[in-house]
Image (cartoon, rainbow, N blue to C red; front, side):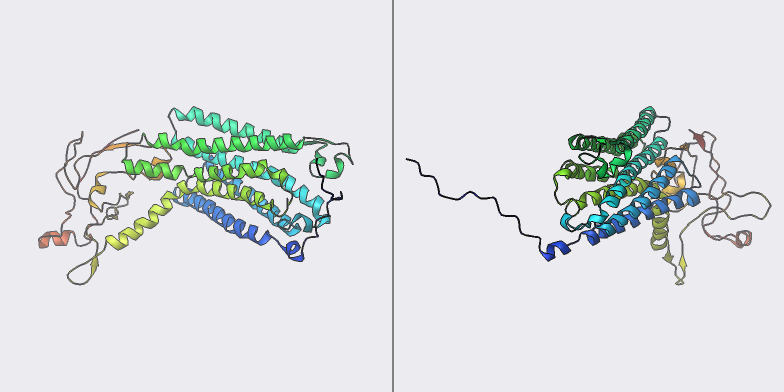
Length: 418
């Protein structure tokens, strides 16, 4: 015999109202604490990049133009991000001001378009940068195809956002949608799947641009340590790929989050993080000349100065060129001849012309100040000026105006070929 519990059937009790502490919670300051420093770092990276290209290398390419557009878009997204935080983004959905609902969704509509544009221009900048590295190689047609695909994909993604509803205004004005309006819009599941598909394509392109430099630099005639260093520098885009991978599940479950303006607000900050990290990663490889110049001066100061017997600091054979003669002729500066083997004509494998693959040359040097190297033009055994200190008074008088160490040690014939 079955016994049924004698429990009266009644409707579940309504949930208690949120506490004042819950209603006062606001993630906005934390969101800005993440966005502010990242924006400053990405903007600084772009400014340093422009300084290197304009003032140090005196060259400005399409990759720099694309990066300039990217940082301009990031400034616009920062303004919109600050605006929606002032409206209530970061507060719980129950505490979001109802009067700010319409302007909030209108701003986020255009914010989504700008984010797509920023991602696209960052990838275009990286693609044009790699084109320099891939000059006259088999990777060049592939990279051109990737650039065309990114442009087409960016346009398609933008159109998917713009025309998510007909009329277009219904994309941010929910009053035009059913049941109050007659606008036709994507189903929420379709819109979610389109967004995840776009994110997957972004991840794939990020990985391609981050991994392509590895086989490129592996063919350079440099040491293994140099190859690994170049590969790491040029593959910093993997950080942006990792962020995109982390963000994709948040995008897939975005419409399931009830607290869309509180807990769900972190999805928007991850979009900003992905953009800023992408800008920084794309700019760091171009800053090598700046860092090399700085650390070279530090190394010269710490290692290149010794104390002589008289207590006066002197540099042992440190030459930045030859002494300029007042004969009206044009004089050309020479490479720094310090540190022994560097005076034999070696090239810095991290130098801008090597990393960017432009106007690279192979140099075969003749006999120099150290060792004997073959030269097709023969050897010159006559020193123009002695490297060592003068040994007699006659030569003292001849070289009195020439500082020690600032002299051409030996003439050299070189063969230069592309």
